[in-house]
Image (tube, rainbow, N blue to C red):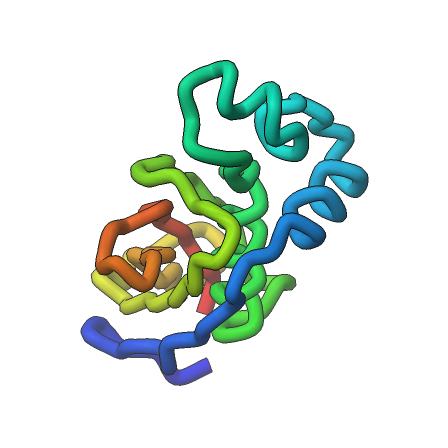
Length: 132
């Protein structure tokens, strides 16, 4: 795979995020915290409404990254949650190669990834390593 430092992936947009997306992810992941699906519970906890499970955004970002560089080549994926995602949000994933390092398996691309809301706020920032 021909990847160089500075290469940028084509951004990909997801959404708008729906309550159904959130509930479906809860079912798939087994995370049934009511703050993500029960309006009364969420507002009683001080939130304006339910909000997305952070790992849903992480899954979108991981899918974006592996679609770009290949699921079979990923060696590390770490995320940092930054901003909540609400029903109606549109998310854009982007990524760029920030380094290439030697490894026992061959050259490894170090990648920075972001998932941003339509407001410009970063919902999730991630780093990943892919054998190239």
